[in-house]
Length: 94
Image (cartoon, rainbow, N blue to C red; front, side, top):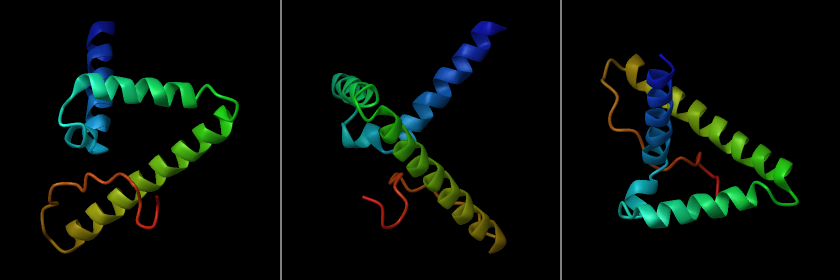
């Protein structure tokens, strides 16, 4: 059972990579993605680790909320949701 849970967890993490648009931005270059993740890990372990993590958590939460609101609006109109926007940043976020 633990193997199945681990597999599901890894698939979900890969989905986040896709959802953030990183696969397309990096042209599916796994070495580039790995390098970016290593740089991100260093940033999240640096002097401002708590602040960086809080910023990333807030951006992600806003992106999830925005996506959910857009999906709800589409459902309310009686349409099926289109392909999600690969820009994980909420409007106005840089």
